[in-house]
Amino acid sequence: MRTIRTPITLKEALGRMMEYAVDGGVESIPLEQAYGHVLGEDLVASYDVPRFHRSPYDGFALHAGDTRGANQEEPVRLHVIGEIGAGEIFAENVGPYEAVRI
Image (tube, rainbow, N blue to C red; front, top):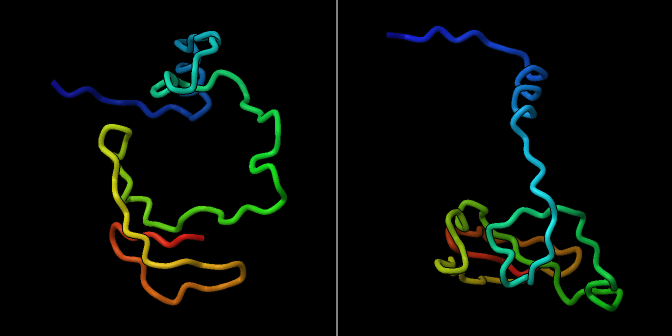
């Protein structure tokens, strides 16, 4: 037997979901045990990170899809094919499982 669905507004859908929302409370745990948990409060550093005004690099440019499914037990390895300095443009193509240091 087919069920006929009646569309509802976003506001009504959110209201229905919030009826089942549970306040999970907040607990302090070591960072090493935080995998799989949800942050319950804002996280604020007690000092600047890094502790100086310029970082040697900002990170890496990569294809986000290449990291799908990556986790601590099954990391994804990317080949760093170059580096982009401040104000530079990377002229090469970044292929699958490749990254560029920024």
